[in-house]
Length: 153
Image 1 (cartoon, rainbow, N blue to C red):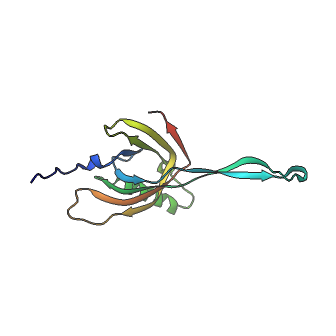
Image 2 (image 1 turned 45 degrees about the horizontal axis):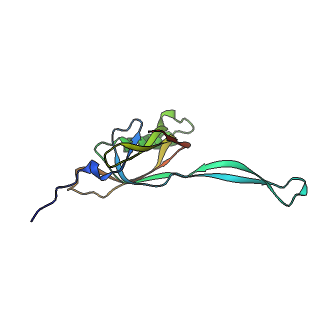
């Protein structure tokens, strides 16, 4: 009987999440990036056909799921945001950070790099406590941000 070798933790992921000021964290799932443009309609001069133009942008929050890390940088970032919100109007601007979501090929080369501007966590869910695990498990982290962009690899 041949036993398979154990999969290394970093081999499970097909993308990386790079966060300014956060050491290392890996996630197995990331929600989609989406932006919606509001449609503004104006009926000029009693026209039956509206003149349509783009309005405000709405960016959906991104949720990273089933993650693991060997440090507590992500939790510390969430704590910084919570402390900033507790100070009435005295917001520390450094709690907003750049986040890159890097899609990788199987050999580790970069296929796409999405950059989120001015991101910060709005929700942090710790995972189950398992004495057999080597990593600190993170069930999910939800990030909000001001803008996203697709960068050339």
